[in-house]
Image (cartoon, rainbow, N blue to C red; front, side):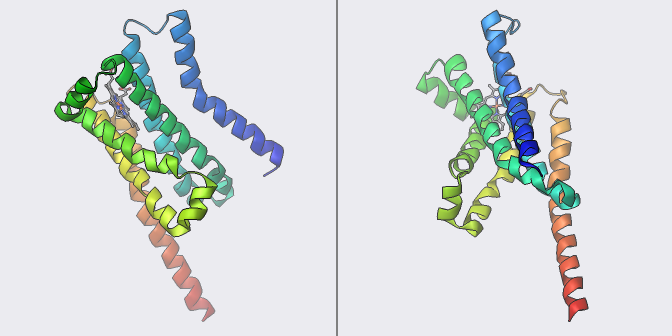
Length: 208
Ligand code: HEM
């Protein structure tokens, strides 16, 4: 891919990822966040975090299925870091606007409301991934250990989906779409790995 195309695509990705945040900032300044701005901010940041996390998980299977799109790998870290950014904004909204920085209220919420417990777990799983996202960390940890650690992203996505389901009212199916997409991504991984191993074995047998 040409360098200018890559720069253009990266700029568009930055803009796309920042868009929900910019809309929230605009809404806050113009007082157009609706009847319940706290909920609007929490729902937007939470949904965007989960959406970006799942899009980042789609990068590897898409690259394997369509080798012409291998360059997508250059966008995975950016998507993952933006997922963490929105997850952290989401957390800060809860800390500031739901609990008013009251440590007792926070602890109470975490212990008593299972969807908050699961949200916290999701964020804690994303934290080491964001902290080790630099090239320096990859070198320091070594590729194998880094890869093993970053498998946590699948667990984080599953916890994020559970948090989503536990947060909606009974009978509300809004988390279904992301659940189906994540389910497909989780199923496709072992299938593609199996197909790759079979292909490698066939090539070895043929060349023997
Ligand atoms: C860090 C701890 C977390 C806390 C305390 C927390 C808290 C909340 C709260 C209070 C809501 C409901 C908002 C409302 O009904 O007005 C919510 C919704 C949601 N959260 Fe979290 N959350 C956390 C982490 C996360 C993370 C890390 C993700 C994603 C990776 C996430 C994804 C979502 C989603 C998708 C929704 C529903 C959005 C919608 O209905 O459109 N949360 N969370």
